[in-house]
Length: 180
Image 1 (cartoon, rainbow, N blue to C red):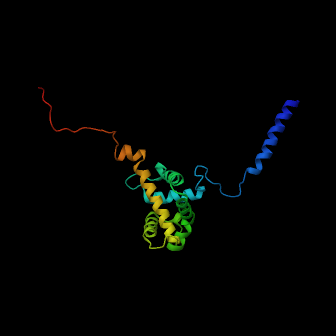
Image 2 (cartoon, rainbow, N blue to C red):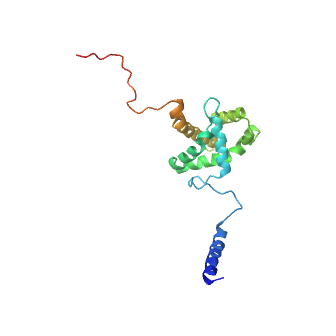
């Protein structure tokens, strides 16, 4: 083995040894795209189930097919104030346990109808804003608001459900113009 090859292999080995301590495989990693929210992949899956419950895909396509959960996370990350982001994250992290305690079944294991009932009942609960039910209702309000906004502005909705036409669009005149 010549000296250049040995130096190259030593440099690669040193770089690998330096990089290994930064690799943490013990806990679920955070999704980097949402730096203000600090969301994990399992929390994103929970949000996907919630948006699929809001837009189940019975007559139109499912929320998951147009990646509505990503839109909700981006809007919450970029458009909400810090205290609103804290409420959203607190609601998302506690949603599974809240549903388990109040409805007797984990949200991820619920059927579509019972999941929709759980969301409806949580949004209509009378509670103070600081209580757990109040935080969950505000979390669901943010999720519903951004889900609706994302669905109505999606490419699917704008091209297939209600085709968008540029202004001034068409003119449907009723008078025939005669030559003078």
